[in-house]
Length: 162
Image 1 (cartoon, rainbow, N blue to C red):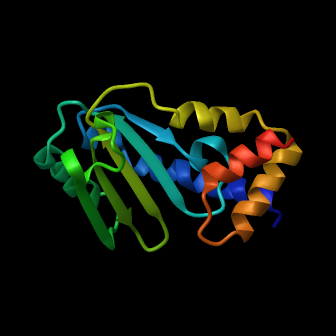
Image 2 (cartoon, rainbow, N blue to C red):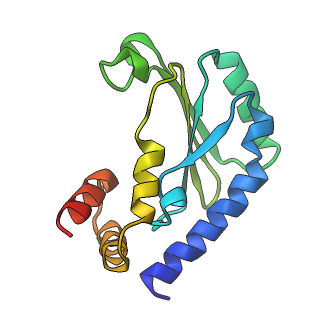
């Protein structure tokens, strides 16, 4: 199977998982699919979803995670309260609740942003959909062969260098 066919098959699996999770009924905020499941440049079973959730609190997020545990067979859940000095960057707007879920085959990243601001995640994935066939193949190859990769750096490099 070619890298492109593999990416298409993974994207189809991701869409099925996304439907099965039915995140819009597990949480009171609108889920937004981001990352490689949106761009179509998948090499791993990794589903990324974000929510604008300014009224989120730990109890609501944890209740939603419990709902998900009844929909899919979760092997692990890592829940993080990343507010205040625990946020991932110095920017106050990057406060969030963050959960990483694992099934036997999938890693599911859920980010609940506590500040509603413009975020580049969706635009970046949509821009990647517009990459040429050659660029997409190059990105898939680099993602497939680079251990501990920074996918965003790969995207920027390939798109900037044609």
